[in-house]
Length: 353
Image 1: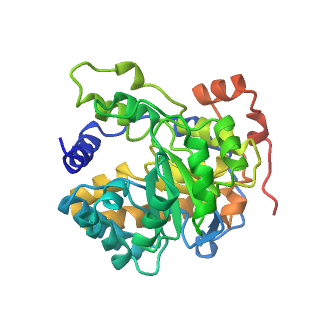
Image 2 (image 1 turned 90 degrees about the horizontal axis):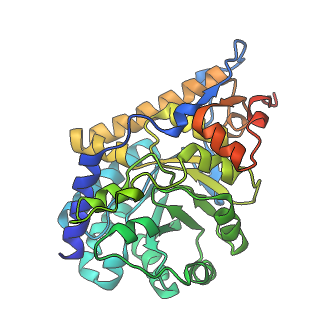
């Protein structure tokens, strides 16, 4: 099977396996504010993420890479939706295009159709500094996203089995490129210990990519004769991973992803400590159902929902939303308590107004 064929399979399996009906963000509840003193018309959703000014906290996250004309079509449509809504956009892995210039067109369409927006290049942690520079140049990218996909590789029949040296390669890449470096998990969450290690080597943004969204173990198991089903439930749930990362109070910017389905869940992720919310599977599903128009409509709906939640919570800015009180319940509370993270600090804080 070629790389392009495998990437096309990933798209189809991502749509067919879907996302769970429940995710850990269901454990997060806002403390109602009967006197919010806010107006939807005055909500400011701009944010600084990794030193980059974003007009919207929503990011269309990495989905496609190296799938030929189908990938080009998806990337073009998503880029147009991003341009219409002000969302940033990350592409899928460019490794195939870095090695084969015939694939460049599948990525160049993103910058062509999102000329004034934020675009993130993408490579895996097996990258070299020279490949990183090439990936950034290919897109005239504003940042480089490096994805971590250990579980996917282990379940993938033809996947990698040796993950040594990743931290050193990421460190050298940070030094080689002149744009912020984002390190992203691909659906299994990131621990506080991992986030701290990445902060030490100069990474600008961590995308925690928590368990609860597109599940690459389930996707790769569809391609195996003997399933490694124990990895299907592996990982740190999205809400817990956000709180773990936020507990460090580090200089890193934090992006939340992993099953975020709407603007309400984006608001919950930000209230837990994220600066931005990245969506992949839900945007891809909208695109497949109704094309660019449906994808853009979905993103507009998410923005409307986010602004309404901010208004109800008394938060006029993203920074203020990160200070409103929320109650953490259920399995997320159990996880965080076991990890020594004070969940009561979230419920007893008050927005500075």
